[in-house]
Image (cartoon, rainbow over all chains, first blue to last red):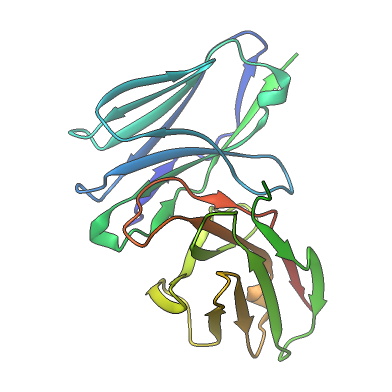
Length: 112
Length: 114
């Protein structure tokens, strides 16, 4: 069973719309959750971290965490063409020796 | 403030050869982790180094080995290269062993095995 699962997409949204990216994880004792953005041929770049249930907002990005449902999501408001990238969900917990487990990523395309 | 730096950025090897990849962590960071990212996949954890010792290891064979130096920089060595070792190798740095905080990645070393 995969530790972290994401829809691979591709997900296409028009410019200015809200993009919604979802992630589920299998380890109930996971403590830390991250969203990374990865442009083609580049390394992952951290855009959001969330540690507690609920929402966390940073500019146009909102991360949502529901530990009971083992679900974390990322909303991108007012999507821009520059948001076109692959978004990786990552999960970390003490039970796995602080290893980060990544999903396969969701490819997002924002259409001008 | 220098971020995570990796070298070389690209390299081509043939099956059976050996490769060494290098990483310098972000200033102030003392923990280095290595990840392998195959095309179309998420990064897969190889191992983590802290205080010059391998602390955690993912599901990778012994052909993959590493080292951490007193200045916190690190090397990843892969012996007896296989075609399937072709991937982007990412180094990530962080602070402390018990950290469940943020990982900062270098730009990666893209290895092609022919």
